Amino acid sequence: MPAKAPTPKAADKPSREIARLLRDAINGGELSPGAKLPSERELAESHGVARNTAREAIRLLTQEGLVQPEHGRGVFVRVRPKLMRFGRRRYSRAMRQSGLSPFRAEVIAQGRTPDTECRSVTRISAPGEVAERLEIPAGTDVVRRENWYYADGEPMQVGTTYSPWAIVEGSPIADTKKMGHGSIYGRFEELGYPIAYVREEISARMPTHEEAAGLSLPDGVPVIDLWHTGMDDRRRPFEVTRFVMRADFTALDYDMPVED
Amino acid sequence: MPAKAPTPKAADKPSREIARLLRDAINGGELSPGAKLPSERELAESHGVARNTAREAIRLLTQEGLVQPEHGRGVFVRVRPKLMRFGRRRYSRAMRQSGLSPFRAEVIAQGRTPDTECRSVTRISAPGEVAERLEIPAGTDVVRRENWYYADGEPMQVGTTYSPWAIVEGSPIADTKKMGHGSIYGRFEELGYPIAYVREEISARMPTHEEAAGLSLPDGVPVIDLWHTGMDDRRRPFEVTRFVMRADFTALDYDMPVED
DNA sequence: CAGTGGTCTAGACCACTCA
DNA sequence: GAGTGGTCTAGACCACTGT
Image 1 (cartoon, helix red, strand yellow):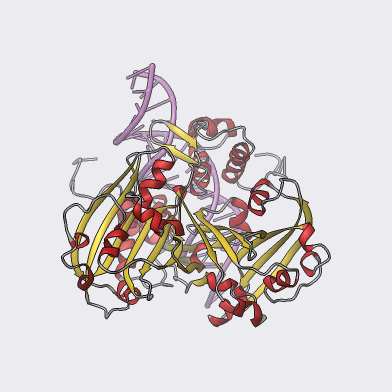
Image 2: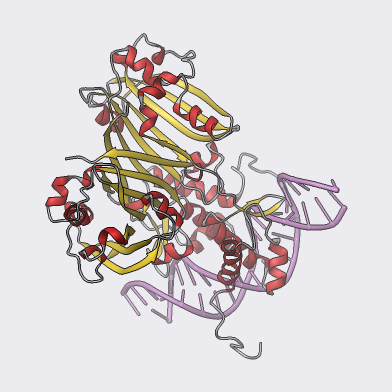
């Protein structure tokens, strides 16, 4: 090849450059959410690079969560869904008495169709992370309930609830059969454990391989990993739930007084 | 080539298979955090595939946040750092009077060295997201302070605080110069705005291109995106801060009474 | 210097979608 | 069947890290 640098200004690697152009087009509004990007082969030809290089550009945008390739159809600008919001109100008495679980209420409020499924109810010995939060010795018997939450048929969250066997024995909570669609906190109240305090420990990370498969997560979508502890009026923990939630559909919203 | 399928059992694509083997080795403990993986060329040869295929396997694990390639050195199993925890106590009177900002206190408690830097203090007209939360008309003048938070020299968070000009005019908060390393809530208290309630809206997502560069984020690390609103004893908002935090170093921990 | 990951090429075939 | 993304090959050169 002749001259070494016809345009020394070129912003580095071709793949980065193509990604930058597409990103700017998306952020600038030339490519709206839902729009289809040029195909990999088109991008490759129009930029005079190999297909793999165009593909690398798409990959960069995918990891940023900006676009989403669909096999056989094309690459599309991702639509930012309205977030489902969960917070302190989730545990209010009003919610508890509405007969609706907090998840169902929120999804319905957004005009979508909720669905929940209890995949398993088992009696196991408490793992360390659970025992600590329940303030019981590790290995104590607990009931484990695995719940899946859907909106319009798509899985949104998985919640795994653990509660001491000594507390829930004989109640609907320990029952494999249906417990109804209401809030579980109504059941705990009947057992003498009215929820009065909650602790929520929140972190975020990329999903594991299994989570990505189970929740049908596209690339570039993290999960919120939330450990929830429910306590009664004397601050005795009676239930912990670990939620794994699609971060692109979920927001947490807490409104609370400041501690002294 | 001769026979079509010598082992039809082969668990799908070679790159996925190599990724699975490495993942299992990591989760099984054969490869501890900090350990070096075989080089791409070694993996390619030992599995009888092209280097790009081995590379694709590494990429899958990188996106899961399991490993971290380092240019010229190798690919390493990621060390899960101890999380910095922030929560409701962050705004307590005790914290306010300790003379330490909540961030500094937490980092020091972990035996690391905190650093904070105020990159800019400007007077601008409030963007919509800010005005809504401050309950002021969009376009009202606010002071914008951009703060960067470091632990052991590495950037951990960026917090952008907005407060009505009418409230902070003439105070250290509106001053470009140093404001000291204490909590900003002490200053607001002096101005007649003792913090009494907070609202925290939390979501998680992949970092933008700019955020990834600014925070030196490795691939596979999401950010926590937090809008914080500070309110006085009459629930009047006087300050909002948007935090963007490295999710692999950060946890939020809220302990609160349930609403009626 | 040798060894590592980062980027790129120019092909190939497969799997999926849609008219 | 035409067009799309998904995976793979067998090379090449570059940039960075260590000794």
